[in-house]
Image (tube, rainbow, N blue to C red; front, side):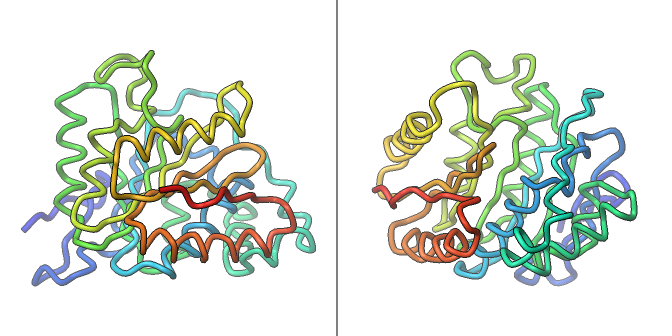
Length: 267
């Protein structure tokens, strides 16, 4: 039975190995990570989406933060939405209130998001991820050991799915989720949602290409994307489950007054 230390960002298995596997909030982020995005508008839209998806999915929401070391940048300043409750609060009032309180407290960290409980009974994988291949294998081996059948796995890489220009183990490979890792996540009837940053290309075509790549890599699955002006989230699941997830995400998009868009379900 795996027990790792909370102060190193590990996850602790409940006694008896009960389903659910890890206590919420135990997997705290180590110091020196990229916390500057916590609580910004993309964070808000992301948690609203994850709550909608988790509500339509059996099993546990497993959040793999894919945290990387701080690079000293000052991104993550999109906080004006918190001053516009009429425009944003209705999307998910509970998350809006929780993130507003977190930002006002000055504690804009991934650990604070976990402690706020905005993702309900989710489990968190909050270790620091670097570029070194053996350490990366250990990182994901711990995640695979935490997953159960029918879980929904969310990956939050800095940039998104792998690209041809950055090989496994090379500089900045920690910013990407690789295809073989997504394949492992989708085993045993699990579903996955992956954060994807937009490069400087035409966005609709880019989303279509990413979705097509998912469908080619994972036959027998369906996929769709939920996007804001800045990022997209790629969702991949077996067809019957994907239809339920697509309906849940579509209901969220309907409430958000054009701030999110959703693609048709592809299979």
